[in-house]
Length: 595
Image 1: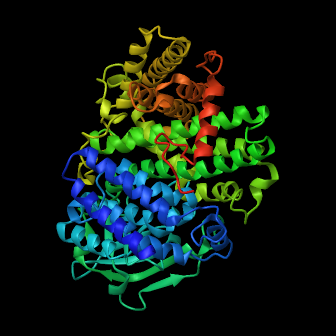
Image 2 (image 1 turned 180 degrees about the horizontal axis):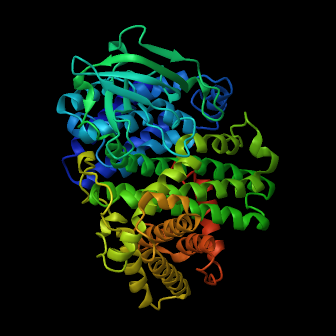
């Protein structure tokens, strides 16, 4: 049965590759079919006899071993093809569709999603963006054959274990490089067929300090590279983490990706894909925790959650919809506005983890002691996700790296973009059929304007003229409140000195970036709600979910408030319970999941 299913998925995958050159509607339908098939292959996550279920995945985590049977299934299903652009024989057409396909994996386990394959995309992104044709074709073949790539990051400020330490590469007499240095924590260091190394090639600090090298472990002379012991890292499975030390390892000249000194620029260009994708898929992991909470309190109340749990359950559901709106908008922007997505991608990566961390704390109060039952398929997801989020890049190091992107741009955005830039195309939020494919080579950095702020202003302007119902009027009030916050930010940011990244040392300036990120989140919620008008989903077209989501975002600012119409929370809770009973997802798509 598995062989038949994976062959069917492979045929669907071939159609998905062809869809990259056909109408976007075909690509979207194809991605939906692949996600549905992957859900079916992975099976009921709560079944005790399912080797790919939560109980088995949690047991693998406890024993610090990869879930080999599930990884084999993903290999047979050809999941690696999702990370290879369609022009090189893979199925990667758009980033938002990739997130959709990966959600069944992340719904079960963040570690499985990272350890099996998404780290290969993070590594390969530099090659898709700047590699030679030979490099791109060779890496595509490796991934399509089931191989793995991993990324060896350069060291960042406020680094966690993964981002600490770095490698250096100096010129060799034969025209290549001599690679040196060690890094103690690398995802899949032992299990990868190729390393994408961000190595320091210039001792001076600055934008030309690093280069990217494509290093094949099998071509490194014996004795010049050492495998370090497995890292004792909490959360993610220790089996996936180990280190490497290079001792003047010779690397050929053709290993250079792009131009010498282009490493920092490549990191900035490609990290926006990584940041946005993480937000899109990790939200699916929080879906599982919310499902646990609904299960826990519904059993106690004959199928209906007790009233005291209505606020946290409805609120977290609204937050997950908001997170999905933010991530999807930026993932689409990578295709639609690739030269302008940089700052908004960092803003989304900044605010989504904050929401998810707060949501997990709310759900912990609902679940009580059950939320820390490590081996429980029904309730163990909370404890697991709390441990995994920081290692997945959603901790302090990720926040600091996003601030380093946003803060230096605030003054320029306030002076040249906010309240001046035209509204983005509506395909950013609604029907994505006309979106072009993702092309890493087109990704830009800095100076590209702010389409999300422009969307917020336009949404508020349209809402101000509507009088159809208390919900829409309340939504108009919230929209105007966020526009007012943007005006306040603009006035403050225009007064900032022109001191770029050094502003990160100023808590007041970092506070401005915090507030800006919340405004970006509000813009995404309003954009998705507007796009849903007249669509097939009456819940998304109703203002209730957007009102609840925006009110929770507004409380983070303390300046945007509105009295919610009666029945707002109840409407959102009713949809949550209906989806739970029908086995549907808690994201914008609300698709049927595996039983």
